[in-house]
Amino acid sequence: MRWIHAVSVALTLAISARGALAEPAWVSEPSPTTAQLYGVAHGDASTWIAVGDGGVILRSTDGGVVWSPVPSPVGDALRGVSLRGSLGIAAGIAGRIIRTTDGGAHWALAARPTTRNLYAVSIGPTVAVVTGEEGQIFVSIDDGVNWTLHTAGTASTLFGVSVNGSTGVGVGGQGAIVMSTNAGAGWGLTVPGGALTFFYGTSFATPATGWVVGTASTVPSLIAKSTNSGFSWNEQTAPTAQTLTGVSFAVLDTGTAVGFAGTILHTDDGGATWTSQDSHTARNLNAVSFLDPLLGIAVGDTGIILRTTSGGLLGVGDAGEPAGFGFDVGPSAVLHGRATIGFSIPAAGAVRLGLYDVSGARVASLADALMQTGHHALELDCSTLPSGVYYCRLEYGGTWHTVRRVVALR
Figure 1 (tube, one colour):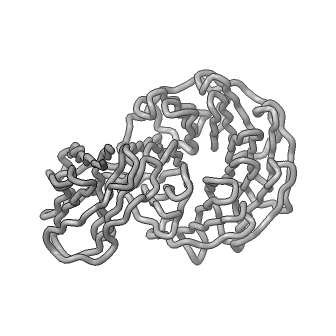
Figure 2 (spheres, helix red, strand yellow):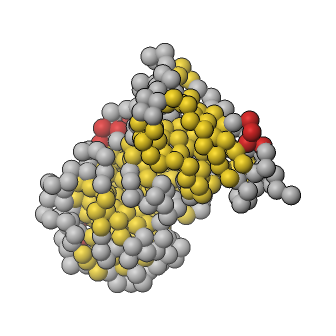
Figure 3 (spheres, rainbow, N blue to C red):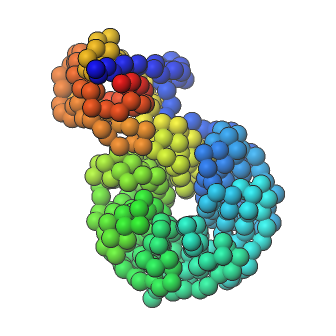
């Protein structure tokens, strides 16, 4: 006997400054600094670290809600940070590298491998990699205690790096991308962009598949994807003209990019389509990190810290919920493994309605088409779904979206 019990958990809607109903997808958390923040990373669901100008180190132990300053052993700006469990490494200006072995509670100076500026760090399962000026790549096989210099035939500054498995990819100015597929032992170079192309951030969801973001003279907001460990890249379309500075993919299909003027972009189909999310700020966002498809932190200018627990999927933006819009799960959803998903739209527009599991993977698509004004009811066959929590996401008009949490029980 198959029975599915679908329970709609109502969203808590706050009253916006304009008096309209709104649920911010991204919430600005209180920050104990006004310094520029350039890097953010997580050790686990609770422990997060952000770093920035003046050697600033901020730490959260409650998933990014409350942040406290941590004593820093450096006064130079820290430009990147990475954590793997309780191990953390941050790198910055004048070749400074600092380490923690207790989840960021205490930091100490590590070996200084260069006096050149360092901009990015990523800790993989067996190696840590730091990149910086003049194409310098530093690799550590002992958790950041000692570093070995590598080069890959470029003098361009490398602003971003991502390590996943044995793959490491660094990205930078003049269109330069360096890559290693042997845990940092050797590095190659590709230059998919020209002299006025600058790649600022990269994230690899698997050793083969990753993304890079930045800007170019012909494409102000640049996103590209690689499926062969960074050796070749295919450009994707970004719905903004702002420079992109950071990107994070916690799983293969679901990712977020951030950039100037509060830009936040989201994809749940591996970058085939990107949609804008409302950050409720015009400040530049310099880095983003996601623990999973739902929990993410973005940081930026003057100490701003943004947090989402829904992958940025909730929210109606500054203008509030559109008049005449409604989203409900019909009462017949409890019967015979079939749920009726009802919604109303105030005017004809593009509608996309899908069901997602907790990893962010889409498990069902109910609609992806132009629909007319009024109420619509679509049937979802839940009979083949495993019991568990799912998210029903409704996009309307290309600029507005919201989510309902549903629980399926066999």
